[in-house]
Image 1 (cartoon, rainbow, N blue to C red):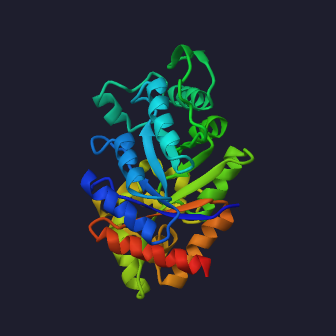
Image 2 (cartoon, rainbow, N blue to C red):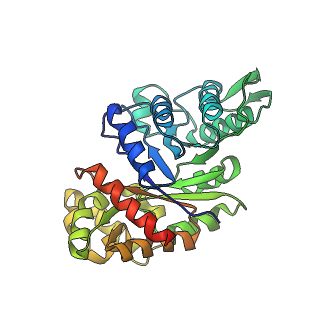
Length: 318
């Protein structure tokens, strides 16, 4: 299994910051840099093109695009152009899209699961150079074939959580991207549920590298809490404290960050000393993660977080 380490550029940054940070990630010796497409921030295809043009070899991941926001044939055209211009350097993630956002743009389908599975299935076929006619519940294509399919089709990953969606991703995607917090237990449970040979898994996790473990933990506290909510059941259920934490989610409201136990933060982030962070990344690899993607803490300098990720990458290679 190939073990890769990457970073994610926060969605809250303007597009003008992306290329410089991507170059910094490449300079730090990281394997991947990921961008975010959320409504209503910067578009994934446009920013991916800029980042790929500004770097030389680092892999760019789009994590993730709503499957229902674009016609799948047009999405395949855009992806094919990027993949042909930058062969072997692109990973494209698709998810359902946040329902409230998709309703804002009149894109929420009658069946989110059918729309997701049909969209990914036809995009992969188009990228492979096939001529596609398809009549589904959501997707309808009539004799469509790309004029310029990429010589190296990019990996398509599913950014989903629920059991049915994970199973669908196993059928139509090359891999799965697990949102933060993604623990080794969650990775193993996901692998068992999907059960597809060769299907890859990538994980998002908050990064807080600090010589003082207690300070690292407190720096990560608010960000860990922000990633946990009522929909976090699949991620938390495999943990020995998952039920207790979900109960806290139901009652804590805005007070969740304060109520997170120190040992929970340690398990739900890559945090602590360099040795501890390296140990946590290796535990994710051992559980079946091919790519660990580290997230800068919000409000902290991204360049420092990328340098910290670079230190972890160096230690992993040592």
